[in-house]
Length: 254
Ligand code: ATP
Image 1 (cartoon, rainbow, N blue to C red):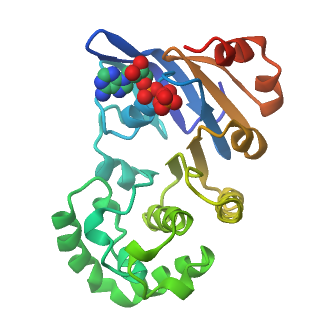
Image 2 (image 1 turned 45 degrees about the horizontal axis):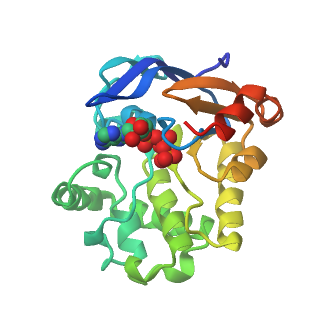
């Protein structure tokens, strides 16, 4: 494990019918950028969903900043500083990038849109501050020229940047990103990775779940390999790459 783990998963279990998706998975995630990889069916998505409160595990514990967060719903997690990115909901696609950023309150994450609207109104109490932060965040992600554009008009990569911007506006300590590079062209991939590294330097922690192993190996300080619902190994990219068991797990299928 890591000495200064922020997120700790201990013996997590999840079954679907007769299928064991998580078989007592234990992982530690510290500061910096950590990658989670594993062959198809290893349990990555299930682990991600159990950590972020979208699935209730059958057993085991998740702790964040020392607190037990097992089964805590996404909106409450965001308030504790753990946030995941979300695809821009269809209802928000007709709204501009600016409006999407103004609605990015912690409570909104994991809540239904109706809740977001209500809270969006409340957020408007502090409208000047909210607008300034939205503008600064748009600039940081180079979305400022798109502020008045409906979110539905953005390219795949621009959407990923907007999703990241929305998550960042909830003031998290740790961001969990599910497939941040999927369907993104190389130049925007580079931009997303640059921003992640900028934010890492400012003290934000990241957990990236990615199919693209090369991206993970190049950009993460620490890599966790999941296999058959458990951690197979974890370490630096070099350690993981030279681990025979990792090679076997990928070659052997599930
Ligand atoms: P991939 O890389 O293919 O996305 P993964 O590592 O994310 O895989 P999971 O999607 O977590 O793995 O799946 C782990 C196991 O649990 C697989 O055998 C999968 O078929 C099964 N599984 C996941 N979700 C469900 C579900 N809702 N119902 C039934 N089985 C499921």
